[in-house]
Amino acid sequence: MPLMFSVSGLRGIVGKDLTVDDVARYARAFGEFTGPGTILVGRDTRSSSPDFLKAVKHGLKQTRCMVVDLGIVPTPTVLFMVRTLKANAGIIITASHNPAQWNALKFVVRGGRFLNKLELKKFKKHLDRKDTIIKPLKARSVRKRTDAIRKHIDRILKTLRVEAPHLTVAVDAVNGAGSKALPQLVRSLGCRVYEVNCTYSHRFPRGPEPTPENLYQLSHLVRVKRCNIGVACDPDCDRVSIVDEKGKPIGEDMSIVLAADYLLETIKGPVVTNLSTTSLLEHVCSQYDCVVYRTPVGEAHVVEKMQKVKAVFGGEGNGGIIDPRINLTRDALVGTAYAIALLAQRKRPLSEIIASYPRFYMVKVKVRMSRERFERKMPRLRSLVRGRITAQDGLRISGKNFWVHIRPSQTEPLVRIIGESSDDGYIKNLVHKIQRVLS
Image 1 (cartoon, rainbow, N blue to C red):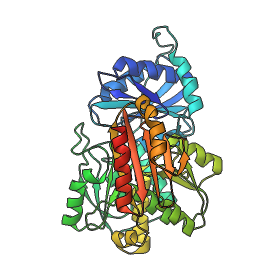
Image 2: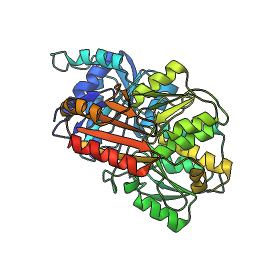
Image 3: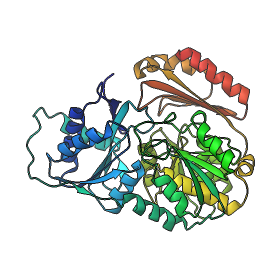
C-alpha cells in the first residue's frame, strides 16, 4: 500500500510503507516549507517512534530550523505549545488510533493547528525536489522542554475554574502518550483517581480506539472501585470516551454532547462538528439557542469552519472536543475536564444525565475497500437510499427519521458507514443493506 499523505498527516505501516528515510525527507521538506524558526516535536509511545524522532531531527537540521523536543506528550499538547510559544510549527510522531505496527507524522503550522488543503498543496511542492539531502547549513543543538504537559493542564484549569473533590474517576490511557497527562489532569481537578493502562509502553493492552468494545478493563475498574465516571483515550490522547458509574460505555459521540451541555450554559455561540456526529448535538445546542454547522470529517475542516464562523465550541463524534480558548485541535484532556465539570455542576449520576436526553441509536461499520472501488459503487448507493444527499465527504443521506454517512477513511484503506435514527431496527437494517452493496 502506498504512503497515505493528506491533511491528516503522513501515515503507513512501519518498514513496509513508511521508513526512516521517508520520515527524514518529509521533515526536511516541512522545515523548508515553514521557513526559519522554531519547530516543536513530540511523540507517542510506539516502538518505532524513537527512531522516527531521530529521523525528524535529522531532516529538520538540514534546514534553518531550531528543534525543540517535548518528549512523549499528547498530540493536543504539541499544538497547544506551538500556539502558546508562538513557535513556527510542530511535528508529532504518532499514528493516533491506528494499530501498533503503524506510525505517522502530523504537521502543525503557526497558531497551533493542522495543515489545511491549501497549505498541504504548498508543502507538497517541497517534496518534488529531486536533489539529495544536503549537509546542515548551520549546526544547531536540539533543545528539550519537560514542562509542556504541566502548561497544558494549567491552561485547562484556568479556563474551566472547576474543582470536583467528591468525584472518583477511573482512567485508561492505553499505555500511550496520555498515560501521565490524563491522570495528572484528573488529580488536578481534585478527583480521586484509579488507573489502568497508564504506563508508557509500546504495547497497547487493548484496541487503540476508545470504542465501547475496547473499554472492558475500564468498565470493570469503574464497577470494582465504585467510580463516578471512567475516561479513556487513544494512543495520542486527542479522543476521549466515557463510561458511566455503572461501568457502561456511553459511546464516543456522547463526549461532545456532554461537553456542549456544560459549555453552552455559560458561553453562547456557533458550534461546529462533522457530518458523522450524532443529531443529539443539535438537540442540546437548540436548548441554548445555538446554531450547529457541519463539515466533512477531519478536524482540519472543523477548525477551519470554527474560525470562519467564530465558533465557541466544536469537535467530532469520535470523542474529539475542541475549545478554541485552549486549543485548535481535538483534545482528550479538555473533553475529560468538561465531563467531570458537568458531573460536579449537575450533582447527578452520569447515567441519569444521559437518560434525560432523547434516545438515538447509532450503528458504525467498517468495510475494507479502496477509495476507487467505493466511488464506483456510489451511483448504486444513491439509488438504494432515498433522502437528502450531501456529497461533500463521501455520501451523507438524511431523511425525516434517520441519516447515514458513507465515506472512505483518510487514514486507512477502508470505508466507514455510520447511521443514526430514533428507530433502532430501521437503522440497523439500513446499514446492513449498505454494507452488502459495498461488500
